[in-house]
Image 1 (tube, rainbow, N blue to C red):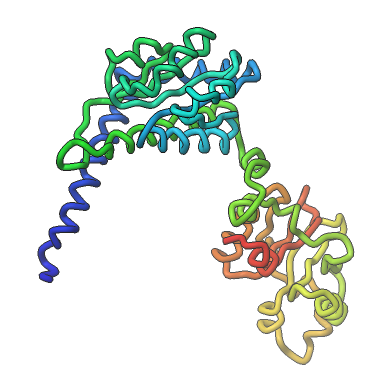
Image 2: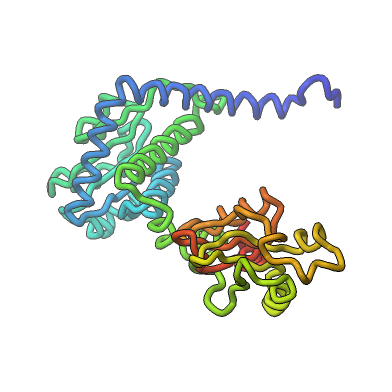
Length: 329
């Protein structure tokens, strides 16, 4: 294969991505144009439903149904109570999962999918507010909705214009935009996120420093006027390879590490005071910081331990091995 000219299969792949990029660019542009008002309506509708104790039911059929499932999962994981209802199953009893307090988001590019008729009729009968994500502003689905999010005109990445590609990418992006907007508007933060993602690597990333730090008797600490002979005893009796140096007020004045010992290595080392050897203004971290932030600081500064500080006083220490052990990356 000639490396100076793309392989035809790579060219085909690039064309598909370019088509979807154009669709997303048009969607972004529409958010400050024709989509601005209906998007804000949709956000307000969802927030009203959630304030009233309801959930957001997301549905669609075919490829739109797959995107609907993803949107429901993203909403739920970012603090908006949501679930997916399969459009076909809704007609066979799953309509019972939808209450009068809930809201609906229905996806259909054509807006005329027959399998959605029962869902739409149920929403109108019980006055369940409906948000439509569709490519057809005059469709049956759009006419039934309180908020109509019409996808801008677009070209499917499929060369025949048949397989839903660009349209489903735009649906997914619009769903993400809704979820993230709701997240930011309610002030949904890392601690809220952690409550919904306690397991796996994500749970480790969202762990807080105060949850994993060593404290109390485990802390290697010594006074600022102590001799290095005593500092070495404290340093070796603990297992962190360092010792924190306290000023008379109990605040962290400095830290002594293996590197400091090497720099001051001499026959007189044990007779020096900790103030003469310590590194002043050490890098520290707050107990409310994320474990991932602690690891980033350790890697950036090329150190292995961080003292955890509250009101200038050391309350804990965290070692890089603690972070790696729980899976922080």
